[in-house]
Length: 297
Ligand SMILES: [Zn+2]
Image 1 (tube, helix red, strand yellow):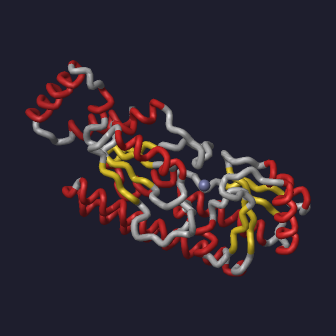
Image 2: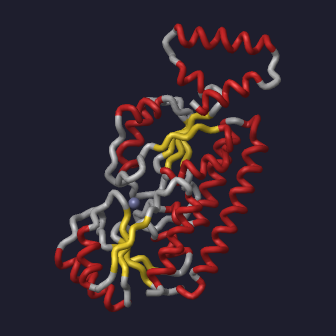
Image 3: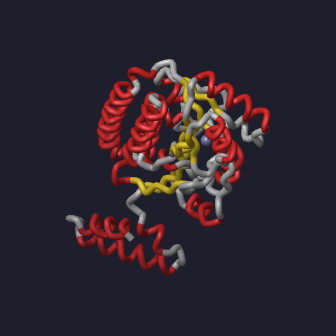
């Protein structure tokens, strides 16, 4: 609804009446021909689908008002195991651009992207991770500000190529986004200044790129999606005791049972984190705060 209103405003804003008439004629034609209101309502936007919600933040920062973003993996779903719904496939078929994470080891993209893209061959596919250095089979590149700088540039290049008439606007937005990332990075470095070399324990290894960037070590309970054995839990308890770890970080959409068992055995606690927050900046700041708290225990 919001989008429809915005579009209507942009059509009434200083446009010649003749164009308006053309618009309404085109609109009735589209409605009569059964294409429906959705396609018309977003006619001025670039419709972009992404895999995970932080990518919506990246695209919106660069595209500003010019994009309507659709996120494939909903909040709270386990991104590794999620399967798209029929409605999502419809939204996807209507997208002009798909920005994929593109990093290795992301089952959702490895399993569904080809099928899904087969439904819309005209869609431009953008790999936001092009040019990044990867950790082995680790798709979670968006937890690293320097990787997100590369993603932002890839997204900007794709938008400028797709819609060259607004190239300068995309570049300005990109520069503002990059400055915002610099501020975030500076704040994280400041917050974690005394924590270099420390270990933190997670159930699902979503924060490896973050750890690398800030000189920390991520110890993961989960091993390539396999069920966690009692022997493995004992090993992780010993490891946690040896490293003085007092907290186990978990994330929505993943099993927390083994994390709770380990936390109980080390007399520590389970702390929830969200590497998929749509407001990426807020997600990164929240994680930094959590980390400073669990590392200082
Ligand atoms: Zn993950």
